[in-house]
Amino acid sequence: MRRGMVWSTFMAIALMTLGACGNGASTGNAGVAATQAVIRQVTQGNIVNRDQATCIGDRAASKMSPKGLKLSKKLTTNLSDLPPADQTTIFDSYSACVTTAQLSPAITKSLVTGSGAADAASAKCFTTQLKAKYPRSGDLVRVLTSGGTSGLTRAMTRCLPRDQIEQSLVKAMVAGGYTTAQATCVAEKVLAEVPLSQLTGATGASLPADVEAKIVAATQVCSASS
Image (cartoon, rainbow, N blue to C red; front, side, top):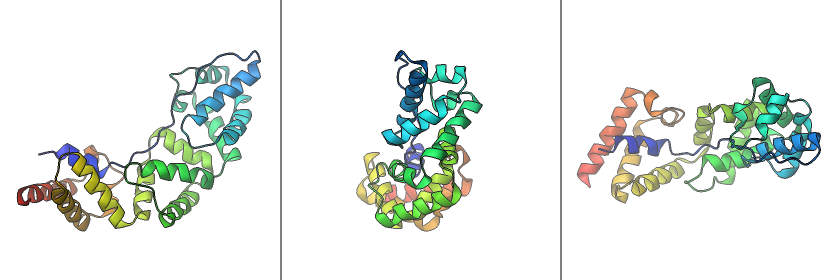
């Protein structure tokens, strides 16, 4: 039985992570080089445009420690690798330069990767939830950087129509080797028996036993009857 694949299907909303920065080539001006290093770092995640990144870089670079600036110039450095104080400086700069509402479209797109674009109503719903929970955009970026994104997944799922979630699950399961009939059967059974809140925001290791049992049972029944 493909238990691992089935569960991964139900957690297949891809969450964006902020990536590594660009190279640290010198521009001949230490201040400009530092700003450019920060700009390259914050644009790597594709959640801000160039003007917003420049604002963040201008504000953050002058306040960061020498160690933080040095790390920012390395290809292997992620935002989460910086000293905590420098991370806070960058998060505060996000809050000063870009709003949560401005970040929402890119985050929404990352959350529905593989399942089609969110419709206007779903996107608006998610933006509203993000603005309420994270009035400061820097706090939202901190969550994305830390990997603690289960709450974002739950919020996005609450905003998506049930049929869109079902279609996404069916598509992913077919790609994993199930027939369309089997995949549809599993998705319908699981979504009918398990609240969406229990299918999101968890890892395989933390999946409640009763929920896992229902997923496995649905898979067995649907595989045997198709």
